[in-house]
Image (tube, rainbow, N blue to C red):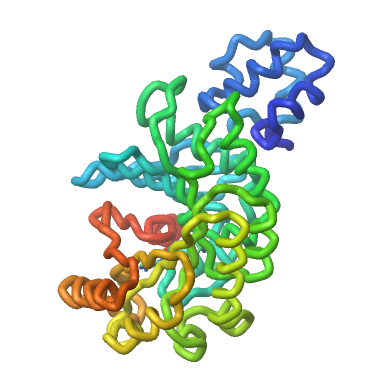
Length: 341
Ligand code: SAH
């Protein structure tokens, strides 16, 4: 079966050339509004023809948990029964959707729940578009856009699913659809250097975030296997190239882990590493998910950020939202998979 949301509007015009021209736009609108065949005004005959080959709505809401702070965590069921997560964050400056790019992940970061069962498969561009449609429709009128920002910070490594993510960028920014501004999209990568260069050349105006989490390669290797492939210096060079091409500030995510990367010396090393790079550091407190790694206390985290600021580094502590509903990366999916087995 093929998925209709994998097609751009132009591609739908070609695909559906045997039907009246406005049917393509009708299908495109149905995709954006998260409607299935039965909820459209498409003639039964046409539906029958399409249905035998094409899925219109590849994603359904399986479970929603709402946090005290309004954050909503979704478990979404794909047409093949795989499950992915998505988070809807209510924010004063515009709501944010945090979404997954893969079912599982093969990067193997020690602190991350998404990677515990490895990679199951990539999401297609259309499945990622439909993720947004379904969550958007659940948070207001399906004909409105009920969010401002999208961050690819859910399960999966976006640059390990590079082609589909780039195709999705074109779908989500299409002015006939959600028309999301590139400036309101962030992509987070664990640092696939070759893809950072490739992506820089496409000159999208999106914010690139890199999960750094360490100040030297040996430290990084103990928590992130990707550090065996690329050094921190290689990442920084790639980011300098990205900034030169896009003139956008890049963001580092730095997750504080007790007694590993949370000393003032680490803050100093970070200030040296990032010197001369137009960047911001998002400091995060580790969400403990049962492993051996422990979180740095809130108080120490604030002190770490203050130290960075003193050293002239732009850094903030990321406010944690939805922690009462297992809002962190892959935790809810991992728990549900365990319960269902
Ligand atoms: N694969 C991408 C995006 C997904 S993870 C990446 O590595 O950037 C999104 C962010 O959440 C990353 O910075 C990741 O390192 C972080 N993260 C994962 N598990 C976490 C945990 N238990 N506590 C805090 N942050 C976590």
